[in-house]
Image (cartoon, rainbow, N blue to C red; front, top):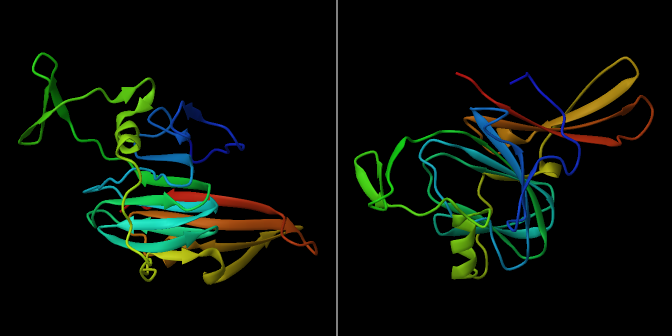
Length: 221
């Protein structure tokens, strides 16, 4: 993959019926992925856990609840949420229409399938297999919708250190020539260890910031 590329609004592979647009997948990178999710009120992105992958969510618009390992916290437009690897299952639940960008490292676990048996070997485990999608919709989203909204404790708990809002993060100024810019390192502020997310705004010198970009990067050790 090239060092970077620009995706205009709406670009990417639309996953029919799932409210998701895959921005960066296996064809663009074998190390990370990115998608945009439009979550309707009362639904979520599907609780899941990762042993190795870290995920960052950035809320473009809306209000909802972050759930991780049974703990909840309110989230809103401009929030950056880091779900660190190995810290339990997590999901986002929409209280109002939620538009979210999600970024994560890609880790593949080899699984050996036995179609006649309906089984797969994953590590030392044998598990029952099911198709990965139904009518083009990822199977986990189909099953989550069948279960209905999860039960969430009321009221939500305190926001953990892994959730920060754009307005809470100190900005640094930079620029070149006739362009003035400011940048906030959201990923670092929210405790990211394996990925990173920066929010930048730029404008001609003397004019208010007008262009906004969210930059994702993976840290390599």
